Every structure is written in structure tokens, then in C-alpha cells.
Length: 199
Image 1 (cartoon, rainbow, N blue to C red):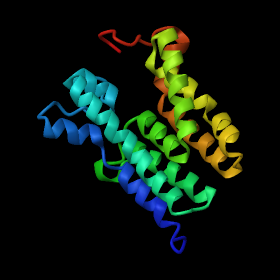
Image 2 (image 1 turned 135 degrees about the vertical axis):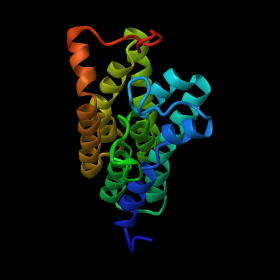
Image 3 (image 1 turned 90 degrees about the vertical axis):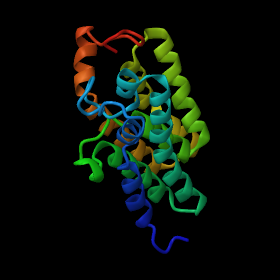
């Protein structure tokens, strides 16, 4: 099953490039999330332009495209490095989708799905951290960034795998880069809270 391990990251990138937000909005005859709201093709913006049902479907779709390739790679006994690279590739596909002009979302849901693919406990700890921060501060981006900051630690505690930790750090760095504007607003105290009209 390890004859062609490079196919796992390649397949993960292609799967990650399938934009759930754009497809859901097209099927539900909603505005294109790239040209409405924040312009970000992700679940949060779909919530703005299309409501809770469309956002929930988008969230599940984005998470699954992170989870499925990584889970399959692990199920087929790939090495930790290949599993980690598969996770990174899935997130890269979401951030820079080849099918949509390399303009994708911010990668949080896909990252979380990939972490569940690495290990259910890694995913559970990550989501629990997101919930704790979001319930405390009511700021979605802060919850995501705080969770990703701790992911390498969670991976190390649960797997003791250096390659997986490095891949976790890489994913966190990629998502942090995508959140530059959010980080700027957080530092200025201008990031909207969950449930606000501008959130």
C-alpha cells in the first residue's frame, strides 16, 4: 500500500481544492461568497450571505476534505511523514485551490478535519480549545488562532512523532498567514465578536 505514497499528498491537494463554500452557494442559488460579505469562501462568510444551513453544510464539507485524505493515508499504513504531508496538502488545497484560481479560504475547518485524521484525540483537544476560547472571548478568529497555537503540543503528546509535529507547525503557520488582517484587528481591539452583524 506504500508503493506510491506521493499520491496521498497530491490527492489531498486536489480534494482540498474543491471549495465547499462556492459549490454550496451555487447549488443553493446564493450569492458568490467571493464577492459578498468578507469575500472569503468559507463557512463564516457563507453564514453571512446564506444563513445557518448553508454554513453548516460548508463547514462539514471543508472539514471532511481535510479528514478523509489524512484518515485514508493513515488507514493504509503510510509513514507519519506522508500522513503529515497529506494533512498539509489538504490545507494548501483549501488555501490555494487549483480549481478556483488559487484563491481560497482561511483553512480553519479543513485544518481541524486534518487533525481529526491524524488522531481523534488531537482533533478533540483542538476543538475543545476552540470552544473554550470562543465561549470566553466570543471571537471566532481568536479561538481558531489559539487552538492552532497548541496543536503541535497536542500532536506531540498524543503521537510522539516529530514529522507530524513539524507538519502541524506548518499548518498553523499557513493559517496564521491567512489571518493577517484578523490578527491586525485583534491587536487593535477591532475584531468583531461572534453573533455581531459584522462578524
